[in-house]
Image 1 (cartoon, one colour):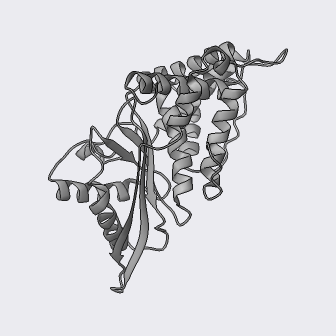
Image 2 (spheres, one colour):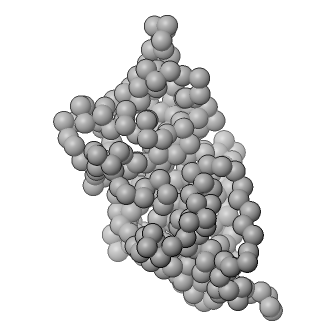
Image 3 (tube, one colour):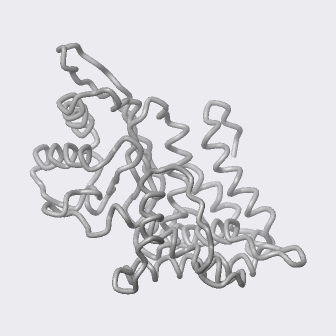
Length: 302
């Protein structure tokens, strides 16, 4: 891939995956996959648009909106919407690129994408946020759909913002469909949706502890960084663990993701004497191989 000095965040993500693949035996065993890496590193589609809205004083404001539809070989584009002043195309390509391979490990039919705007919701009134979300969705709604692209929340986009965006989508497209995740339970939302990422982390680490011969969680102290959505629900799962509350489907997904990463690392990544296989490298390789195979079958590379 050519050097992209204007996209340092994306270049970092690409180089991380490329170096993992190069340092493994994957390309020695399947050299044709080098071609797949070239293709998968370029988004299928990048949508950039202006978002014009009015603040509470009646003044016109404008922001940059984006949706990076990176890869749909395994299913509709899936990834969050971020509202933060730091948002730019490089950051969204970086996040969307990683989303492809994370989603591939779930075993679900999901592609990878990411979007958002350089809008700062901090200090804004509910009315200002609603007007921004409606203006943002006026353009984004042309490019998403239940079988095309299903955005979710991210930094700056919680239940309130998802509600405003879904309402705008419904009015603009005259459709009530599963086009956004993170909705309220009474209008199409999912149970355990806010908790899922934190719970999944705990399930995954459980398998890491077992594989490393460290037993279970009993007697261990847990250090949690930050107090965001992932941290809070990971802590709650450890404080209130019970078999009755375990989400069996989520637990199964995380176990499969762990096993796939572990077995792939054993196959392709040399480990030093006494070291455990690299789950990061194994997961990166497994996600890449799965997406590359689907792209090949669909004629995206040959």
